[in-house]
Structure formats: C-alpha cells, structure tokens
Amino acid sequence: MQVSGSTHFTARFLLPIAAAAGITMLALAGFLVWSARSIDADAMSRDRLLLERALEELQEKLLLAQEELATWDEAVTAFHERDADWLVENMGVAAFDTFGHSRTLILDRDRNVVIAMRDGGRVRAKAAGGAEPDLAPFLDRIDSLEAEAQISAYNAGVADTPPQAMDFAHFEGQPALIGAMPILSYSGENAPDVGTEAIYVSVILLDAALAAELGDQYRIGVPAFLTAAPDSSADAALSITDAAGTPIAWLTWQADLPGTRLLQAASPALVSAMVIGLLIVGLLLRSLHRALFALQAEREEASHRAQHDPLTGLGNRTLFRQRLGESFRAMPAGEPRLAVLALDLDRFKQVNDTMGHQAGDELLTAVAGRLNALVRPQDTLIRFGGDEFAIIQPGITSHEQPQALAQSIIEALSRPVALAAGLAHIGVSIGIATAPDLAHGETELLRFADDALYRAKHGGRNRYCLYSPSLPPEPARRQAQLREALSAQRSSA
Image: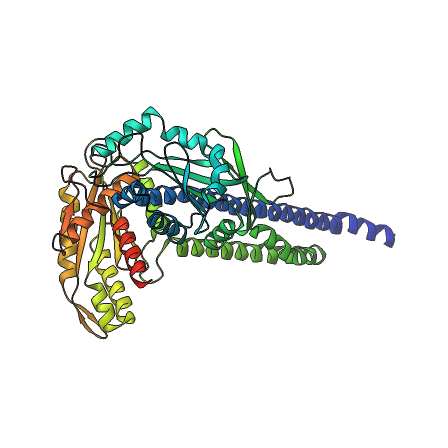
C-alpha cells in the first residue's frame, strides 16, 4: 500500500508540478527564441536602412562633387587650350584626394578620351579607350536633346543645375557608381557652344576599400561588394540596382545578432532552471527582463550618440536629415510652412587662437545653451561641426517668424560670454530659407539657406539674410573653399 500511496502522491502532486515546470520552461524557451528573433530582425533592419542611406549619400556626394568641378570657368578654358597639366591637377587629382573618385575621365564630344586618371594618377588616354561601351548610356543622355536644352538654360542663367547622368553600372568589369556631366562655365562668360562641351566622368568603384569605409563609418561587420547573387548562407545582403532595376552588385555584411547572443548567454541558466524548478524559472524571467531592458537602453544610448554632438549635446547631421525629411513629409503646400536657419559664428577662430581650444569648446557649449533657450520644443537645433549650427523651424506661417528668431539669436550671441580664460566677444551670421514657397525639396532648401548665409557673412556679418530668388546667384561656399584649398596646395608645392 505504501508503494501504491507513493505512486498516487507522485501522480497527483509531483507530476503536475513537474509538468507545470516543464510547460513553464518550454514557454520561457519559446519566449526567449521569439525575443531573440525580434531583436535580431530589428538589428538587421537598422543595418539595412543605414546602408541604403549610405548609398544614397554616395550618390549625393558624387553629384555635388561633379557640380563643383565641372561648372568652372577655368576648366572650360583649360580644355579649350588643351592645358592637360591644369586639368589633371584640378579635376583629376582633386577628385581623388578630396572626393575619393577611383577613376576620372575627360572626353571630347566625339567621345575621345583626352584625360584619364586612375586612383589619383594619370594614365595614357589609350588605356581608357575600352571604357567607351560602359560609358555609352551616360554619354547618350548627355548628348540628348533634353540635355542640350538644359545646358542652354544653364548657360542663360535660367536653370540652376547642369544636366547629369548618374547611375550604378559596370565599369571595366567592376560594379561602380558612374556620373557624367558637361564641363560648363559657371559665370557664363566663356560658355562653349551647346553640343561642343567636354564631358567630365567620375567613377567610384564598389570595391573592398569602399566596403571597409562603410563598415568603419556605420559600424557594420565585414561588409563586401559581390558581383554575383550571394547564396543562402550569407548573413545579410542588399541588392544594388540601376535605374532600370537590374542588379549591378550585392552588398553583404555580417549581421549583428544581439538577440542570438543573449539567447546563447541565457542557455546555461535555462538548463539550470529546468533542473531546479519553478524558483529558478522566476529568477530567469526577472534576469531576462533586466537583460532585455539593459539591451534596449544600450541601443537607445547608441542611437542617441549616433544622432547627437558629444560636445554640446545638440543634434548632428544625421538627426538634421531625419527631422528635415519628416518636416517635408508633414508639410502642406502653399505659403511658407518650414524654415531652415543656417548659423555661422563670427570671430570664433579668434577666440580659439587667442584663448585656446579648451576655451573654444567652452564657448560652443555656452552658445548651445543660449540657442536652446530661444527655440521652441518643436524646433530642431543641431551643430553641423566647428562653429556651424542650424535650426529647423516647422509650423511657421510667415517669413517674420524665422526673422524674429534670427534677430533674437543675434542679440543673444552679441552679449559677451564669460569663459574661464576671460570674456569672449563673438557674433553670428544667419542665412534663412523657407519652403514650400521658395524651396520645393530638401536639397534646394539647404542650398538656399547656404546662399543666404554666404550673403549675410559677406554683407557685414552679425546679421541675417532671408533668401530671395530675385537676388543674383552667389558662388557656393563649398566651391569657393575647394578653390582656396587647391590654390593653397599649389602655392605650397
């Protein structure tokens, strides 16, 4: 009877407890697997979005680089006079050193290669003659009637940008980003006849060096460009297609799987919990909650660091692009609804040179505090770097609102700033542009704000300027800076 009673007790009490413990542990195991997969999926999605944005920025940088180098009066003259040394130095070496272009070609309208550059060094034009089939689609677009019409409009000052053909394609058997643009006169004073312009071609190879650069910049593990579709064993892959949707290459990387790492770390504890019982199950659930909370906090902290300036705590370029895109998507058409204020401190370099870099950092922190006190909660204040700041001001209804904010900023920053090394006296120049009444896109809005800032600085400083399309165009600051850098480089040579 004792055996029967013991068996009955076991069946009635211990087995249900054991079953409950087993079911609990199975549910916990299922929860752990689901959580790990969800976290891994989020991490994979983040990596994919980062790399997609990186490729978009690569195209934006190529477009800006070609506009700066190909719309240049001196370049038109140098090509006309066949000044190969000038073209090599200013349009070949500069494209490699400053913008990282792997290949640079200058062709005449008969598609003959005049200048060929490879990784910053000049090669024989004949060595690049075989690239014509790869470039034919781009050259055809430059030779089209639409492109010639745009060239005429640009020469007449009607169009702001020259025509450009840019796409992902194969170049010399390798996947690449290719851009082609006619070499035009920025001022229009020595514009060549339409259809006779030289063609400036820039190529960025999608190679191991670019993959390593993307990995370092975006903290992506072991990125690589493949010319064939990866097999199913690849951790993660992003297809890179041309404008027609044809795959040109695949960007693969080693996926970061924080959920899997967490699951592997918790497995010994889970096995112990299955042996010990419900008590350990409860402890594991609590431990899991803490681990997931800590992981989320770490991700949020990493996301905050990626979007904010470490010195001032303000947003950085990444946050600026995100908020600007959100503002455009939520903006109704019509009157001014959105303003961007581009700020550049006056006399900051003087403080840095006379009081030291520590005083400069202290000054930037103080400026950030004063600016924060003036903006609204819905505004976005960021620091681009150095002494450059910007403000996104959504929800405006007139030009007077950003002008009033600009005036308040000028008054606030005109007051002396008490630093450990003494009093600092600075000022600020501000460029203002609005949308959608003037600018119809993010790039155009930023260009207008930059142009207004240029006018403010060169019109006396410590003032603001509201962009107006009625004013004559000013040369872009980046182009001026590039020419100054090239001039300084030639002087020191």
